[in-house]
Image (cartoon, rainbow, N blue to C red; front, side, top):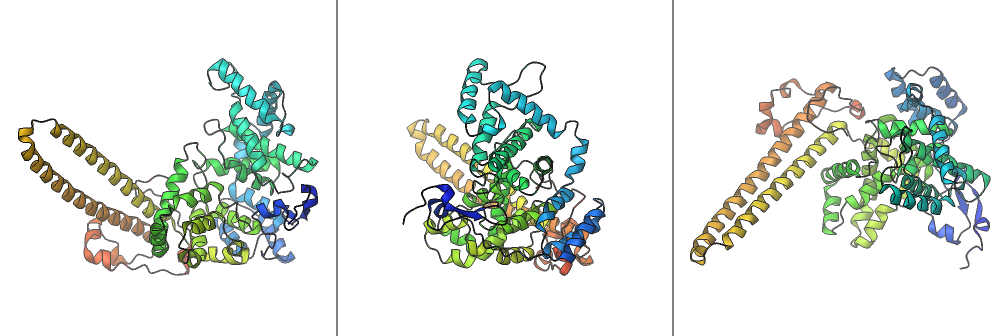
Length: 503
């Protein structure tokens, strides 16, 4: 089949969210993974008026606003009001007012730095080679040290600017505000470049990491440039959201991926075992999901609905979304016997699963509680501790055996017997250690669960006992969770009852 001779002829138009609709069978149509058949609910004029009234009476400290939004979200968010909703939920206006520098201060500093390099934010495509050359020159002059001048405000690293330039081109390249060389696209690319560079200046410890550009671009599609910057600041700085997600080490994302892996293992054991049999490491697709935060799903109305919940409830939504997708895909995945089919399905979620009418209602029914994530994190920590201990024991045994080989051959038979005895004792000790680790993990999980249930007022009095009773068979075998419709409510623990890192 013949492809369209040019990209312009290939584009039939843009959909309601601004994404290009390509002529069938052209190259871009074949490459893209996006659906333009949206199924989100239409919002009546009456509902829009209710939304506007809620914003007029918005009070961040009033919990009833959150409860009201929860009910409103189920019936859909008016597209024109989504940016205002996100601003209110994030509290970004308050962060902007409390900052000693304005967004324009950061932009002005950026422009000053770019002018010394002979580039500007509107020529981002052509600036790559210039920035690359400048980076090599600076590296040669300063031995690769940070691009700082005495008595000046910290500038953004040239290598960081170069990486931002490259990622601006890759971020939603089929959206009208970022696609091509039109005036609208050039302005959109410049805005995205400014926001990401300004954040690198705002927080030089983090600077810029791949993945940020997708979040910033999505914010820009729903907000004004300055509002999008401060919204990005809140998302990347606040522990409720993505604090630590975009560090260069990616330690936080990897830790969360391991926690999700444990959640998958306990919630969906059949699928977990199937992946184990096919030797599919869940971290291969979980890390990708968490890095892009589901912005790569083919149905944009679904992406926005997921982000409504992320901004309302925080990081818990990321886990429940991942679990929901796997639940919808489970029958299909279990029928696959080849990793070459299973992994691509997980990395490119099928359109029919991603549709708003399918995924979002299922997501509302998929609950992952904070106490549950804390339990899974305890399991991860216990396993990491066990691996370290096992590694240490193995190292000691190897050292002992190495020394034994250097002893006179006359003592070799006796040493062999002694080594065998030590190995048997070590194996028995390892077995007992694993049993003890499992026991401690289960005890910790029960304690964490009890704390949250007590806060909900759903723990029977006969089970609200001392920690020593956790270890009794009856406590483990007959604990019941008397749930209700209120069990879906998000539990916000105000007292740190267990030693754990922030999720």
